[in-house]
Image (cartoon, rainbow, N blue to C red; front, side, top):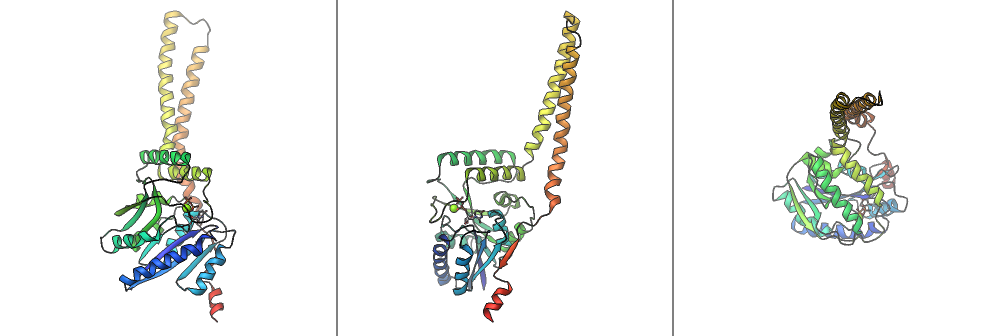
Length: 322
Ligand code: UDP
Ligand code: MG
């Protein structure tokens, strides 16, 4: 037997969950027709939802024991949800997908085939259109991918979704990355492995609304840049070096000017030279220190990535069964 874990991060998805479950259960039984030794588990991560998401999940669990869940003590964000899912999954293969049907379950058989028969470690999906998305959002998204790929060595694919199937080995590699500031798109690129890309047209969410405001996405983009590139830190270094150079040229210019024309306002020239030089050196030093500080700061806190308030493995289940 081999098992496929389906991980679904959910935040206020009470309308979408029943629809999603029907669709994935149907895909699962279709796949089992051809793959007799394939088992499924559906692992829902309730990311501190404020609506009836957890109740919907528990209803599903009551009728289908393949459904499991982890419920967070508050909203930790989708990245934490994905991490919790990967960490708690029991399958030999793991797929992560959204609850809102924007990740079409119909692609799953093809993705499963890529990792079981075609020798890939992972099959990921990428939407080739951004139809139905605000124009300004697409514009910034494109800009973000251009910038980060220029600044970071982890290659991050434009339009890549978090809809991805992985082998156990790859899942273990991701769970082994314990960084607190998680940017999964970057982590996938960083760990390597060979990935098959499957392209599809953008699908709009089936119910509820998007959890990502423009500013939330903006913050997410910044997190990606800071997490996977130290280029912004060296900016101060380069800036400082340039200023030091310019002031050095300035010094020569002013000295020559004084020798040739004399110095009518005495003291001014030497003052400007010193100020420019010192400002340049100061920025340079702050830049160097920042490089070390930023790296250390984030790692020393060692906070947990999520806190579970309740899981389907709790004693609550034993009570139900007794
Ligand atoms: N999500 C989550 N925690 C959050 C925000 C979102 O678990 O803080 C989940 C959400 O329930 C959905 C998925 O992440 O299953 C993608 O979110 P959404 O559809 O809002 O994003 P979009 O598709 O608009 O990028
Ligand atoms: Mg969505």
